[in-house]
Image (cartoon, rainbow, N blue to C red; front, side, top):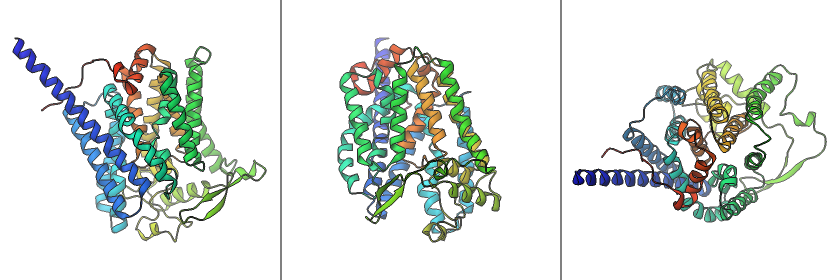
Length: 441
């Protein structure tokens, strides 16, 4: 009997180590991909980055198979969206026609379509904690090098993207030790200073700090108020879109309702300084081109497939227009979803974010989880402005947190249990022994 028990314990420990090793390698592959984005010196970096991304996806596939992941009532929503993306991939194999089509299809779009799988991984509390822990222990120290590299890189926001998990750590600040509270705030400040021109990074940081501050007002701001805010976050972009289409009001045309000169100097990719206006309308024409392209090609319902692109008069001289599909993608996340997956894809994408945020706000015992739900809703909201759909650190951890929102065991944690879980990301002493999902040998 003792011998059998000993064999079982050894098997559990072996499987636990295997899972941790796989997650470590997966996190490192993600770090390599993001580091290459900062370096971005030649074409080889693109192919190495794609190889690292595919390696990460293989690890995710392997873990999910070994964990015998089942389609539950909750993650069915994500699987439907994932299936729609897989259909787009299959369509892409038949629609790719030239070098540019195949390059964007194989090196970028397939990976983006498969990225929702990360949320299934994220629904496992211990796995999510382990990935965050690996980021803190191995990638965060490396970010010091990334900071100096980004100062000379054409991708000036490289450091901000590399430390993008900081958005969630900021929300966790009330639960952290004093030492880590200071460190997280310093990293956030450094993220902003590394690229002051990156308005989206600044906005995410401000929103994260705002939600963190709400935690200290949790006795005043009730669940009903948070739910009202959540609903408004999903309603406002749709309402503004309708107003713009009908010609009543265009929120992006800020010069029409903001008076004064609000400009700054930005360094272009060629190294030259160029004046930029903070109130310039850089989105309306993109909406017009992407939507008109979908109507002209009759792809507005089902999308272009994983070989996506749109007709662009503005970027007509761009290398993207040498491809059969036109410009590969835009700066607006929701439009990229529309372009590739159509209106059906946009609805499915929205429902994933809507239901994930609903569960966090209305079906959780701890307040931090409710704040994460608001942040997830905000990220969908901001996809109408930017939120690049790319296989990178920012988008990876977004889907990881979405998965965590679907985790019932995470949402039912008490404030004390969640504090222990969060601190376990930074300190092994808080990582209590729990039943670890078993990997088959």
